[in-house]
Amino acid sequence: MGIVSGREKYKRKNMKKVSFILTTYNCIKTLKTTIDSILIQEYSEIEIVIADGGSTDGTLDLIKQYKNRLVSCGRNDRLIWKSEPDRGIYDAMNKGYHMCSGDIVVFFNDCLAHPHVVEHMVGAIESGGEFCVGAHADLVYVNDGKIVRFWHMGIGSFREGWMPGHPTLYLKREVYEKCGLYDTSYKCSADYEFMLRCLYGQEARLVYVPEVIVKMYYGGTSTQGLKSYMLSLWEGHQGLKKNGIKGAFIIDIRRTLKVLRQFKTKKS
Image (tube, rainbow, N blue to C red):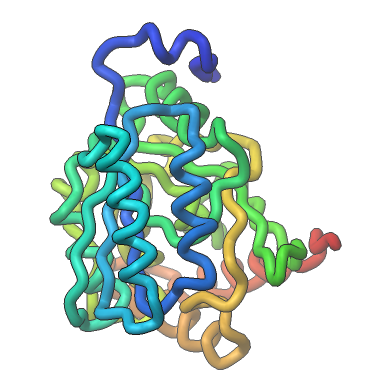
């Protein structure tokens, strides 16, 4: 797949900047793990953008500590942040995008699985050809450090119920410039609607990297139980209709079956 090795990457010129956009609100329990997993990446051109919703649990103090540490190392440009009230997670994500300057954009609130994740994903995009718009990979859901579910979608099409794992999605900036950002009228499925809007019928332009790159914290916006999943499914159905995709109910069923199959590969 043309992955760039650790030794070679330091010799390359014009490296693509990768922006990680974090949306935070009283998440001090997980934020340190998230930021540390980004800072240990072997890929050097990384920018961390944090859009905070007005945290009161010490999250802001932690962000300031990381900012001061990076400033003392001469890397003031590596962390940009702002804290103000927002209208939900997708509003915060849109704000974060407007703060970032990367060539490749990642919306992220979890933990990268190893120090070569960014290197591998950028290498996959660069080797994907002229029409490649980004890359995605596999993830695992973790709860208290234990793997509770695998997300392995591989290569597929939205019509068959397939969808990339959003935390693994690395997209070129041009995608957002062309397709727009996240629809804030959705509570938990604006990411699915966004992917439909940008990638439906063009799935082949997205490179699949067959490895686990993310440890996703279980209990997020779309993983909080049956009620949350039903809302996600309903909003996903509305996203299909909004984008003029026929056979929405059949796609809903296929999507549900694919998600259920993920639980069969659950491991301890």
